[in-house]
Image 1 (tube, rainbow, N blue to C red):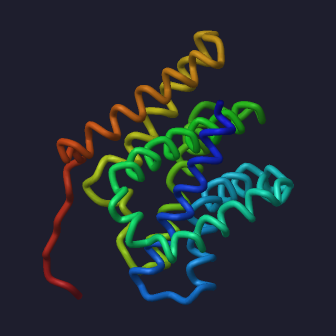
Image 2 (cartoon, helix red, strand yellow; image 1 turned 135 degrees about the horizontal axis):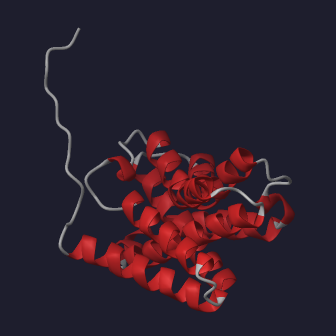
Length: 204
């Protein structure tokens, strides 16, 4: 189940990355690069940080075809995709949770301590979006008021707690998904967010 959700997630993330590139009037190559980084960048950064080689997608070239294809398909479908924003927000929530759980699972399997496992999950969940936003000259969504990285953090702790309690993996994954997706959608619905630090002091 997690693999299927992962494939859906990287497809959706690649398409949202392509749309972000389109808003910046990038060429086809730019669209492909942004789509790839949005979908697979988080896992790449995680593997480099954890010293996990070879990097995941290098062993699954079909993932490359999938994300590049999804990104390019988004170009002619952009106008129609815009009407499906609620669906993409839901798929993005699924992707955030799936990437976080996968990142935690990878770090746990390598024997890392809990703080590192949490960071690995969050890196997998949010790094792709950070790279997309930076390359598109935007303040990354995870650094703004919107609850996004916080959701990844909650999911990571929930998943680790399930593992520590010896809960069957399927139950732990389902619980993490339920908590994460509900929290993310509630935050979007009621525009919940963290306090914002705004400083307009004199510049030197």
